[in-house]
Length: 315
Image (cartoon, rainbow, N blue to C red; front, side):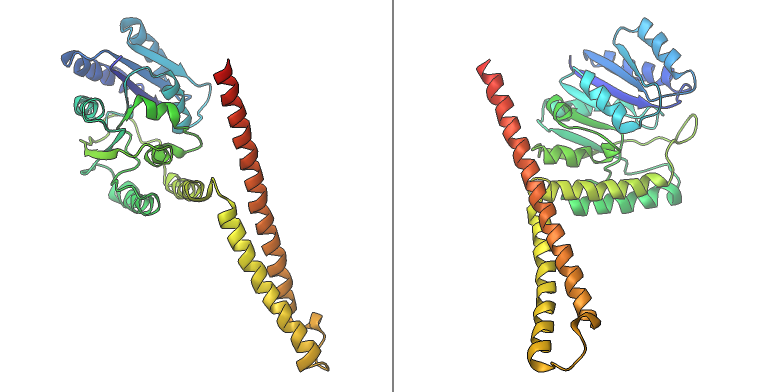
C-alpha cells in the first residue's frame, strides 16, 4: 500500500463525490496503490450514504462512522489506526485542499525521507478578519513555543511517514499540533510545502472563532507537557521552593523585628507581612508536594512499562 488518504468530515454531502473522483483520478494517473478512508464525524446529512455508495463502486474506499460529533482530532486518530499505507496523507473534505498535491507530498516522504510535511496555504481565500488574522497570531505563538518554523500549523493537508501516525496520540483538539506532537515523539525531519488553497465551493465552514481560543489553551498544554511532562519537579519544585523561601524570609524578618528591634510594637498577627509569609509558605509547600507526587507517578509508570516490555521479550 503506497498511500492512505485520511479525510475527516462533517456534513459535506455536496463535495464527497467530486472529491473522490478527483483523488481517484490522481491516484490512477500516478499508478499508486492506495486506500481512501472517510471518517464521518457524526454528520446529520447524507454524507454516510454517499460514502457507502462510493465504497460499493470503489474497493479502495473505506468508511468509519461516529454516532455523534466527537471532533476532528478523534476522527483523525481513528483514521490513523486504520491506515496501512507507507505514506499517510490527510486533507479536508470541503475541496479547499487540492488532491493534485498528493504526488509531490508522497515523493517528499517516500523518496526524500521526511517524517512529516505540513501544507502551507500561502495564499488564502478565507475571510481576513475571521480566519486569516487569528490564524497568523495562532501560528506565530505556535512557532515561538514549539521551535518549529512552520507557517501554517493548522493546514489540513499534511503527509506523514506511517511510523509517525502510529506513534502520535491525537486527542482533545490536538490535531492543530500534530507536528509538535511528532517532534516530541522524536521525529525531527519536519518541513513544509506551499500548497494551493481553494475557495470553499459547497456549504459553510464548521469552525468558529472559539477554535482559536481552544487552540491557544491546547498550545499551553503541549508546551507544558513537552517542557515538564517528564520532569514535573523541575517546575513545581522550583516554584514551590521559591515561594517557601519568600515566606520564610518574611517570617524571619517578623521574628527578628518582634524579638529584638521592636518588642513593644504590634502583635505579629496584626501585621500584613505575617499573612504574606503564611500564604507563601503554604503555597510553596503545596507546589513542592505537587512536583514530588508527579515524580512518583511518573516513576511508577516507568517501572510498569519496563515490566511489560521484559514480559513481552521473554514470551
